[in-house]
Length: 355
Image (cartoon, rainbow, N blue to C red; front, side, top):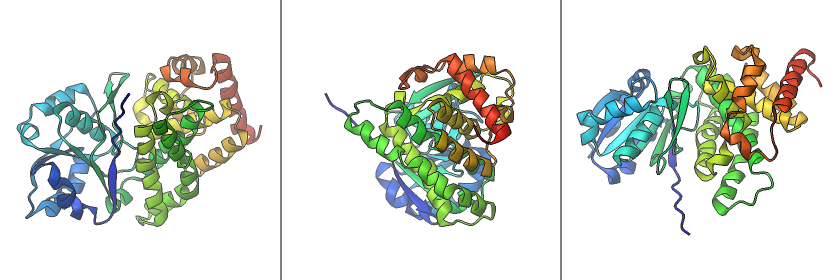
């Protein structure tokens, strides 16, 4: 039996783009930059400056298409600059990252990531989430991006909703992974990932509120940097190391259910997942931890009720949650009756602020 594990590397700071020639030169002499329209505008001059008078030539700056879909990947494959480039520079948020990573995997081109927001771990994980109507495809690239350049000035001035959602999404990693792997005998790789996961939520609960306050003032503080690293790097490493069957549980089951209901586009992935964390903690009877996370979410204006996510029909929601295949990896069976019970408990807690 053999195993190959590819771990991402990263740089963080205001001057990280200066390291592009040194880090990327071994992988080729030309790159195509792919990302969202706003993100491309944010990084274009900085990337041009960083690669000027170096061996690396930027062939083009290309919009990824607006959503992470197979159709956009196929369109990008036919663009001359993409065909000619030795490397792909992926900029922006999760959907542009996932599009570029899947594209690089299909074309066997090395990918380097340049996040402009800290909304999830897409810049360093091999998992790509592709969308079609109300369905999601989990595309696993053979390896994550070679290197992630986290430019803190850009991330620090991004709209605060992305950082807030990033915290909400990253909060789930510790609780879901530790829940799904409970009492399991794990190999070295999974065990290493679980050890990293155990620190994710703790770091966010410690640094997250101050990070939001500082980001609103466009201050790149230590709290902000620690929070950004947790969102992108800690959770990304867990995603790479831990088996996909253990990476997702009830918090993401809520997300997968919500996207099948109308008006999902009003809510960000991390916002939905943050409420799923509360449901998971209630299911697992971690009541003290529930109160702790509830208070934290409240301080960040993250959702605290199903109504905050526009959900009215709880029976339909529960039926959709139970369709998630990853729930079967829970340490015990999560039934419809149990979900009805915890949703009722959440409603009551919102009214009385106690059990």
